[in-house]
Image 1 (cartoon, rainbow, N blue to C red):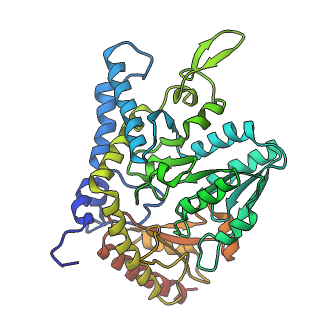
Image 2 (image 1 turned 180 degrees about the horizontal axis):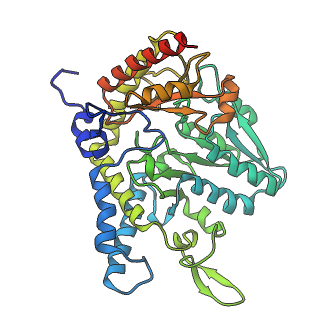
Image 3 (image 1 turned 90 degrees about the horizontal axis):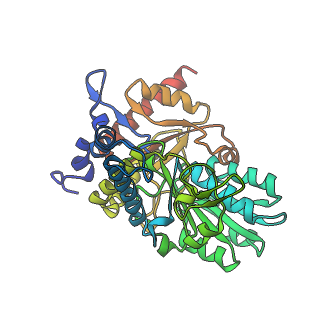
Length: 418
């Protein structure tokens, strides 16, 4: 890259008001916690403001102008979301509070109605708690059996272990696309073929991949996908489930109430058509509209361009961390031929990750520390906590250099005072 060549970060950082904040009124803050939640561009913030100041009304239920405008914008957001993942139909997009609710919807609706004692659900040891706990609860209710696919020495999914554990009893594999801790990108298309060959279905937790690379549900040949707005430069309080139309038609409602009904009597009720069957009550209207704006914003930059720049950043981050004495990085090393999450998770033996995070915070550098909602994975590595620096297209080489410099200083300080 030439010195005078502008990067995606150079072109987009001005769109994010929070990134212009100064620490101690001197230097800009360095936000390296994008995997936990992304920052929001002006267009997304304005979309929320515009809805509440100009179009605030309930959707689908009113015959007046404000309700029509709100409904049109809300349903346009559904169409945008559908196209973002290349879903066959926009009615296959179900708006939820977050990706956790999307996974719970599948577990409670599809799982409770379809699973029986002896059926098997496959997960992996790298799953976020939001893709573990719902299935543990369903196993208690239905008697289905949970099996866990392991990881190899490089910190990637062990495909041979998957092939060993999958069977004709496998009804579903629910798996993360990109691990929020390891950073590995699971080969979903290959995995889907393995699962479908035994007659099973596949659910993909795409929270860590949707903002970083193109996702095409038809090309991947998957059955369910969960996504979360707040990791997509959109607002909190909104996410979505995509599922094949035939599966959604088979599934009973998850929640009951207004909006999701067709006819109601004191004796029984019938359900509305998709997608409304699964959207009981007043939805997060402004948030859905703003999520649509966030998806359009990402597409205006280009997902391929985002992925290319983040690969440069991730390789640089990995190299800087590798040069610091005592730092142990978990997860696969960035490779040119493989996709990878734009993050690096690490620990320093004898030093708690929270101490590292606290010291960096005092310098205006914000990272994540803890178990990252992946306690079983940390137990597998024999550690209680780790630190994680995660990037986005707004991140810069200079930020990574400053982070590495401060991290090295923090480690030396803690070692000297231990």
